[in-house]
Image (cartoon, rainbow, N blue to C red; front, side):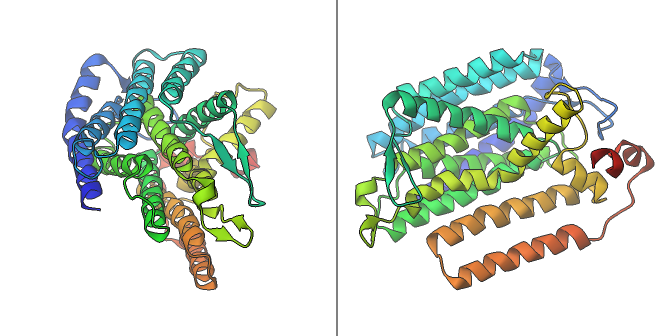
Length: 383
């Protein structure tokens, strides 16, 4: 655990120190988010913050692969370098988009190239657990396709939740911390090796997001941009892929006549649970725009975070903190239910959900300024 804490600290410190440098560089390069009618900011905000996150993750990986515990296993260090190389590629694609606004096909191609690097170096899904206690083996080509799809979907999902200051970084931090807790506690519970690629990735991502939040929380001084969202999405996806590949179905504990595949199934469920709200919001947004005869990529103010901020009347900070709370309840709730499936756990998770609902609905709200109230989506139009 001490080496993982060191990895987290290195990632956090490096990202924090690079945040100011990246902010100034982005301003000089013109990589700023211009003020639009639907925005709440009063001044342009520099982007490219994802490069600071990339620097933090890179420093953490370099330190980790030179430590006696994490660096001793060639499969861990080898996977880490492959994933870091893919991270450089996908962050570069995002940075170029932040600078010159790439078209969708070019961005998708860049994501696929990054996913291809991961696959070429052997980090891919080889089998999937099924709910009936059996496994489904994936051919090399099918495994590569599923791996690439997971990386692309992860990048898009993180990007879709990046709508309020600090929201994407905080949700990703909570999700990475939950995944770290799961993979580390799973190793302890079943006597597995605690040095895994998945645990290393999530420790580094947690630290990098913590180091970035002081620059990005409301009022933001720098945005992570597509470079950061794509990078974090790739890291979360590869942590899922590497953990599932690390678990051997034949070595899992037996429940009756079949292996208990819940430990292997949970890594697939957890990222979906963490990003369930962004996924649902993205699907609803596309459907809403298509039904209105608009492009699916047209921006609007009817996303989930906008509704919490405007329709429920919570302040910018309160809306972000409420969504943090929901991300934590869902992510750590799934981890708790997966590791300790008891009535006490079910009751605790259920109580946390009820509390989250009450806080969301009953938390004292403030009156929005006239400018922001005018931008709020009307209930009539959104119904």
